[in-house]
Image (cartoon, rainbow, N blue to C red; front, side, top):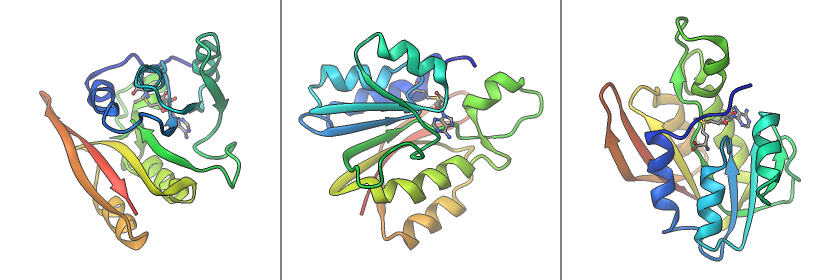
Length: 178
Ligand SMILES: C[S@@+](CC[C@H](N)C(=O)[O-])C[C@H]1O[C@@H](n2cnc3c(N)ncnc32)[C@H](O)[C@@H]1O
């Protein structure tokens, strides 16, 4: 399986980590190339755990002395394990049949585009410390209805802390809290 090469969405998250991770327990969901974990290390996070469903990404990061676990979202994270900051630059695009299968796995969030994000948000809440923060990248192409109503149901609030207009979409970084 190919490893996601960092792009504008990666840099949007990366450049904001310094405001959040210093001395914090950090979880990097869907780590890919490890760009967010490497940045968190530079910013002196207290501890870092990187997870991905892609085994090759995990193997590569082990060599760089980053704690890693192969996991489908939180499937291999202990129930009681909690984090101060959970970051995810997810596959957020609606399925595009023209895209090849391999690249679809890292960019496509499901048929609608929000499926993985909705699953992530449902699971992440139980792994967040009381004052914890979720940092989530979304695109203007990601449908927002289910995401917004789930956040409301989970009594979580969000604000957009950074955004960037690209040629065909706008990407946003959300800060989500309980
Ligand atoms: C858009 S890439 C982001 C990679 C990197 N964090 C960055 O910012 O450049 C999405 C990543 O999520 C991973 N991923 C997709 N579905 C996942 C799942 N269910 N559980 C864990 N990781 C997943 C992909 O393998 C990919 O590495």
